[in-house]
Length: 440
Ligand SMILES: NC(=O)C1=CN([C@@H]2O[C@H](COP(=O)(O)OP(=O)(O)OC[C@H]3O[C@@H](n4cnc5c(N)ncnc54)[C@H](OP(=O)(O)O)[C@@H]3O)[C@@H](O)[C@H]2O)C=CC1
Ligand SMILES: N[C@@H](CC=O)C(=O)O
Image 1 (cartoon, helix red, strand yellow):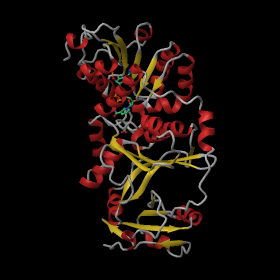
Image 2 (cartoon, rainbow, N blue to C red):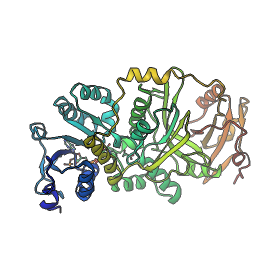
Image 3 (cartoon, rainbow, N blue to C red):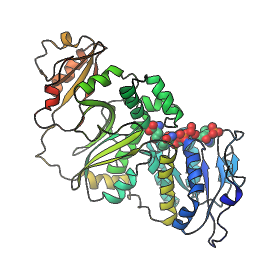
Image 4 (cartoon, rainbow, N blue to C red):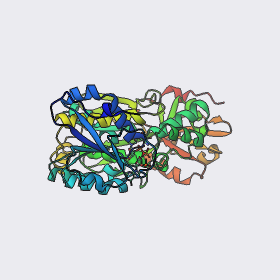
């Protein structure tokens, strides 16, 4: 329990107390609260004055919570909006539809908001950012993409001179945690998901994690953030890790690779293409070693080259860290301004000339399923790269070939066959590890 003296603000400081409210007091909201209490001395030194948290908004105000007597717990948003003394509000409610009316009302009143809610930002970000500009306040959302990794700030602050041609990332901690548990420990999908929920990694509705929507929202935000435009989605819906067969994870290993849940953004002359799906990743790929709840974002800058940002993508304190950093940047006035408008940013970035000498990367796929051999017979447009690998009765093969012909082939395969595209650029001879795979 936090006592009043810890929370009452520092009486030795003469400056006015900065006041913030928190909406949502689950994994993220409580993590922010505890961080603000436990790190108070350091944070108050950083911002040069005291702060307090007079009010927290939740769904059920009758729940027992570890909060100081100085913090009012309410289930009535009016109690927040009626206050005229708040500097900023941290928003950590479960989804876009709950958060939108709150955040809109706050920004309309000129109150800045820091949110962890990626669904809110993906669906309403453009509108809310415009509202914030109109009302001379700010909307921050570092925690909405890749949890504790400061990816948005890093891109905006430290990669301004680079054009990011390509971004590939593991953006959902829950999915990566599940795939890692299943592969390493043979844990079932259901048990691994329950464990992710117990750690506080999963969304309130975990379908958003395992059906790919959470990564879809984060990819949408990244596309706006980097290119100023919504991406062109290659498939209508994202693909998630639900249903990935544990034997497929083991088959990928026999080919020297892993199956990872990958989100990708790729810039061409006139558009940004996006995709979220489980992919086959070889051991020389940046995302191969990103394991457990970690996220990884691999960016290819035209000046800097290849960069990998890696760290905890979900969880109480990693996410609280991202929120609190936004808060400190806001209070100290050290955050970067938003680009003037999406359109201008789009023109600036997309007009960069393409390098025509770029070699088309080799496309390859890991196929898994039952009785693959007969289905692939007489498919002369396909180059068979590997022999068939068998794990616990399931088969896997890596193929490459002409993109269009391969797509036609895929439509003719039966329902048991799962297709995992190979991630990354493989422009040279196909890796020997695959060509020489031993077949069990
Ligand atoms: N968990 C994580 O690792 C990360 C989560 N996020 C995002 O942060 C947000 C919060 O996630 P998380 O903390 O895990 O979620 P939780 O489910 O742990 O907590 C949600 C909180 O919101 C409150 N709440 C629910 N409905 C309302 C409502 N109508 N009005 C006000 N408060 C409400 C709940 O109240 P009550 O306590 O009474 O039930 C609860 O305190 C989500 O948008 C999520 O996507 C972002 C990065 C990482
Ligand atoms: N449910 C999300 C939480 C962080 O954004 C995830 O698992 O990545």
